[in-house]
Image 1 (spheres, rainbow, N blue to C red):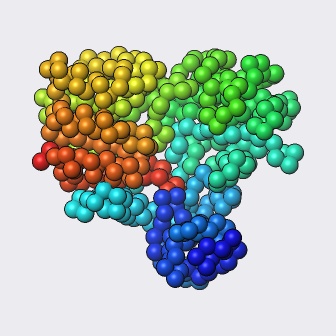
Image 2 (tube, helix red, strand yellow):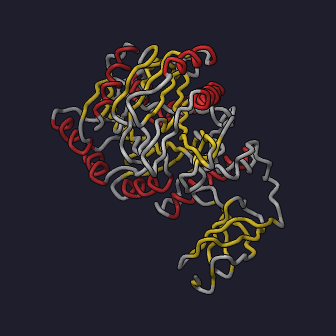
Image 3 (cartoon, one colour):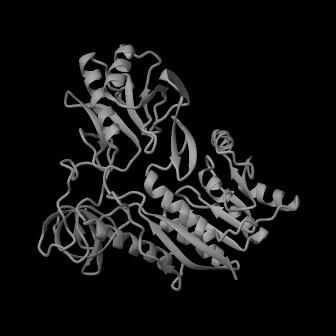
Length: 455
């Protein structure tokens, strides 16, 4: 189909000038924007178009004529096929530079924030083997059992023996579960037919404790040969503390079901962030990169500028991890979260860490903020850590209404961060600085901490 003179199958030569939000190269030919998977800024690439829209096209690189000095060979043998990583072909210092530029571009293009300083991205000491949580789909393709990642933009499972961004013990779990399924002929779930048993394999590793949890997500209540699986895991996975079955009978893309069943050990494992201890259940939120999470939280505390006299509101507090970091430096912290199980975990985490100046409230932040204000509890600092969609405008409006001196915004999406910062800058606040943090090396994702001050 031809649009604006371009059609699927054409292979124009494109000079790449930047990277898109999914890590693909971006360039123009005759004023027409083309996204090229696998291309890097500065390169001249021949790109075969596979999708053509009115204002842009997407394609795959056929050949590269001027390779970037920042290009490198990916370590992973299935990198080009797998959708888990997007930047293994870019040297790590290049990844950090690109992520800073992506944040800067979003702030200027979406937020109109041309004066905000974007600091160099805080990189990881180890940009491989960092994920403490694995969630791999299970399927049978062409008669073969596959456990791994989905191919980009598909539900086709790419088999992975050793994922280069997973902790070693998570990779060991894959091998044991694969051997068990093959030996005892345990059928993988078929999402088209709704048949089979095993849907996903999850691994969670306590980076500082060595504790390991295995979660088998199944479409059925009964698991044949589960005793044999338990024995194999205990013999082959050092530090195994927990084997849990999660039952998900729904025809859905959501990985986890609502019901957990303890098969072996305890229902939680333990890990630490800094000096804080946390219990981690199968469904609780915990940052997947423990080492970088400490850097992120410490930067949030630094931006908050706490002296021990401040009242802090932690909006979208989740299980209270940042709240507890802040509480060590503040007079009082009030965590607000609409998800009930997360608040339950937050209360338990506060108790386990003997924190008596953190209060956790279940409810809608847009309502809880004015309620606290009416009770005479007003924040000096508000911390925001919303989901990828960013903050609802009514939450931002409530924050503006209570007039904190400072706001610290933790974001996993530069685009929605820029949108929300624009709102705050139009309602009495300045945004002097944003700090990118590389929580997910080898991928196109970047986390940010923004400092926002009342004018």
